[in-house]
Amino acid sequence: MIRILGSRLLQLILVVIGIGTLLFFLVRVSGDPALAIAGSDATAENIASIRQSLGLDRSILEQYLSFLQNLCTLNFGESYTYLLPAMPLILAALPNTLYLSFVAFLLAIVIAVPAGIYAAVKRNSFSGKAVMSISMLGQSIPPFVIGIFLILVFSVWLRWLPSFGNEAGLSIIMPSVALSAVLMARYTRLIRAYFLEELNRGYVRTGKSLGFTNARIWFKHILRNISVPMLSLIGIDLGKFVGGAVIVEAVFAWPGIGSLMINAVKARDYPLLEAGVFAIAVMVVLLNLIVDLLYLYIDPRIRAKVN
Amino acid sequence: MSQSNGKPIVEVSNLDVFFNTTQGKLHAIRSANWSVSQGETLVILGESGAGKSVSVHAATGLLPGTAEITGSIKFEGEEILGGSEETLRQLRAEKIGVIFQDPLASLDPCFKVGAQIAEIFTVHRGMSKSEAWAEAVKLLDSVQIPDPERRANQFSHQLSGGQRQRVVIAMAIALSPTLLIADEPTTALDASVQVAVLELIKKLRNERKMAVVLITHNIGVAASIADRIAIMYGGRIVEIGDTKEVLQSPRHPYTQALLASMPKIGAGASKRLVTITGTPPSLATIPGGCAFHPRCTRAIAKCSDVVPEIELNKNGSLHSFACHNPEEAN
Image (cartoon, rainbow over all chains, first blue to last red; front, side, top):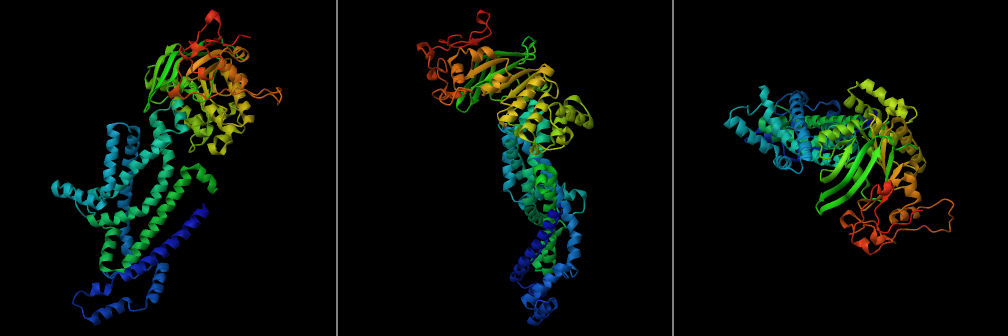
């Protein structure tokens, strides 16, 4: 257990340094933030003085070293656009992002588990195949398209749901549906495939021979067994999921990290970008850690290897 | 050895089983007749693909949904063929215990073995978790697992093959079934463990007065536990009778050939084993007439045209066989 935590901590440090470094150089070849701040009719002196005040006139190595220093102190400096320290801005937006991601993820699981099992059990009937077709569709449409479609139907035509922000309780509905659609579809298909595989296992036959109901065999035994491979996929998906969240937040003007990051990219707001990427990297590594610990809880064979 | 004068538990008559496959309808079991009584052990012996498991699992409802079953299967006097899925489930829960070949696959890898046994009691007997657990530990003790308390807390991958099979046996007998089906129960086990597991099945049968149907391809296993033996070939029962009679005085040439192909201790290394030429037929390509005739040394003209019917209780004899040109009785 201690070993896992230790190796995860080391991984976290490496990931943050690696991603931070990549980002540092990427944003610096993307263009000059001074130009963006100064506006289109600024003089050369204006721009030079902005560059100086931001510390961008220093050599790239100097800038990199001070970036590494910032990483260690978690102080990324002031946002160029908001003129406030970048880290607190990100931390203030973090709960909204976590809230959206959590609801979307929960939605995906709550729908995909019964849908996947249904598609597996009814694999030869029309309804089972229909589930698969719908999930194929859901998997093929990018989240922002689903988002815009939802806004069109539920905000513009029906006027049932707010189209942006996080003011009312109902605001969460559309962004979470848009964000979870791809995952929901993907998990439905995967759960179906895993489920079909498990149906032929000996323990399923044993359960039947003991007179257990199908519901008990499916939901207690098979579900427990397929949660092991499902978990490993969830671990891989988490990073992608955060990427999807950024886009969906932008579509719905959801006040989370994603919206901040999009603005930061547009304005070449280096400190805000760096703080945002740092927060996302930490989040993904921590979520992966939770997945690893869940593994130990679910699969006794893995537990045995660790101990 | 126990006596076969108890009340009949299962009576199968004129059983035919078909499977609907993409290659058409396969006739897996052809007019099978067998029965087993309380306290009695019937062994169904044959090569792989002879239809041993199918003929037995027709009675448990564990055949795949593509199976079509005709004939009659009576369980404790009541017809169960054509009964609802729910009736069969109840029957499996209360009356039938099943032991499968591979004990590792039979157990759920994600739950402690104690919890898997306890689940039977919580589901079917409405016990509380702690009562059920205590009952599970008692049961592990009764199938001779040493230190049952500790073993109950382990997972299937932590047990040896023999212990796993004991756990599976414990699960099968948990609700005191009247019928125990053992489908190749020793095939996946080490030779030394095989004997112990067979002894355990015998002991439990005698204590609990269960009817046992044991499926095997191993004549040694059959000889050591069976009261009666049914020999299957190509989806048919070709010979059935008391163990002693079938093994000492086989009448069907296939039975005779099976016995001759078994090595005998003391026969000397110089004596070559007799093999049966050819291979057993697959269900899709069972020859016409007697299914065994292409491999049979005693085949006569009639054998390739007319299916020999098994004559049950002919002249009051319990030893029956399906052959036009049987071996001489010893």
